[in-house]
Image 1 (cartoon, rainbow, N blue to C red):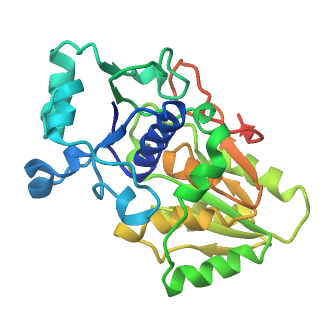
Image 2 (tube, rainbow, N blue to C red; image 1 turned 90 degrees about the vertical axis):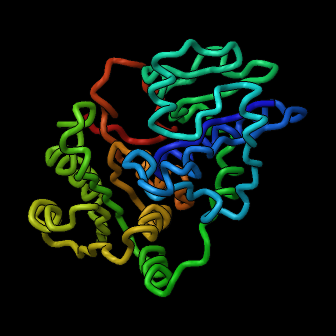
Length: 299
């Protein structure tokens, strides 16, 4: 039995669920579960959590994501059952790990952790954001992460984006503006250089801007796109925000931010786009295999 902890926003959930799929492929005779306990605790239902965003979304969005959810009894076999996100974070720091627990340090979030594929009962907690985990099962993940039926707005957007020399630009601001690990990476010079490289092919591009700060983009990104058609994607908010990611998968080219949301928009894209990504991905001295094969890194 192997159980993978799921926590965080949609992008992180997709990495953790995809990692569970890699375990299913590696250990076809073992039962693979996912742990979603923190999304269903009284604490989360009553107060919510900035770390858990819109709750567990995989089962609501992807009908082919059918890995079973571990019960309290199954969890107690391999880890401490603490159905409260905040208390579980404290316990992780204070209590010794059980022999069945593999808790990947943050420094291994973007590379393949050593001894990750071992026989026997195991509980996995980590981010698993290395592209090396998923390159060989990309077609399988494309199938699992097929998006649901779009509403009228997104259906129209899919049609427009698919029929154009479309360039998706994802700009994440908000919480990234104050996070030390992300400050100074996806700033204006990064987007200037990526846009310059996109436009060097002299094609008549249409740029689609995805962001949680459209006002900033209109002031700062629009001047970089002078002479080109620009569409600001504003129809997806709240629990519909996932559709920005799905729309990215239809773009001909992509300029992504250093976020898991951006990463999946690029990795699931079926048009074999040019993907421009920031290098470094984070302000941390650790190994980073986050870039999928063929992505263009912008220093």
